[in-house]
Length: 373
Image 1 (cartoon, rainbow, N blue to C red):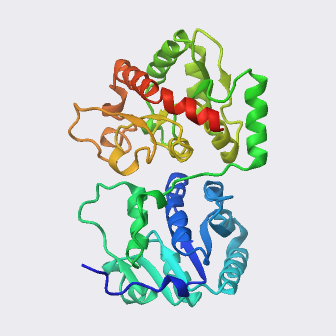
Image 2: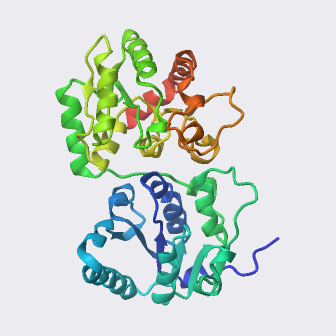
């Protein structure tokens, strides 16, 4: 059945993509940018995200402008926040968008769709939001009855709703660290004697600690990798709990590692991960960063769902429990207790087998990738 209300892409001069969510969510909108630019190369595409997530899309070749909302505006007081918000609205209105693609149910997207005067606007169907929400959009996007689809594909539905059906080779997930981040990564790895493809990147913790495998299991796995001759590079965010978690692992290892915990910007983190032979970690933004650079990925999943959030478009292995029919539950630990039984009981042998299997599978691909790097 053909869509009865597609929009004429040839008439879209400027488009705004809005994604006001976390880092991984924002990165998974990159296929939307790529597919829209592939079908409408004449169109200038902008994006609006939270300021802290901007590095996920910064430098994307499909983007003309990247707008950011600073959560710190609230600290300026009512007058200061209003001034910042008004400045953003003026900047958006000046762009004279023909199309707005709002990809969450954040109320701000509906207001922007109306106040920018865009001819076409797409947003999720939210009957409970009432008339104002409905009238903000020319096209409402229905929620899928089968919610267990990858988030990247669900993001692409915003284009399908207006008659653009991306081909597989147009659904490209990518991240672009930039020359400064690339140079710092080369300097850090070079000082440690590590060549591109000569190490495994380990990012064992999420800011959501209930997604993390116990440090003891991670240390056991990493000890085996070292015994097999692999060099390891550890990364994590700047949070003190994350760095303490990584320190426990490193202190238990038989050999030294390159510890970059809390030392990298997001774009520098991407540059380091992009040089790895393999990425090992949990369901987190760095896992998506690895996938965006075609780095083979082994990811541990507990309460979150790998069908929705697993590594996308890259050779990978998901390590998850088959003995817990309750997963994925989406709860922050069993009973909300911050410890996920389905994750903490994952055996080291299962993770080790996944790493070995993926290394063997991608050996030829890795050689080709290194040759063209």
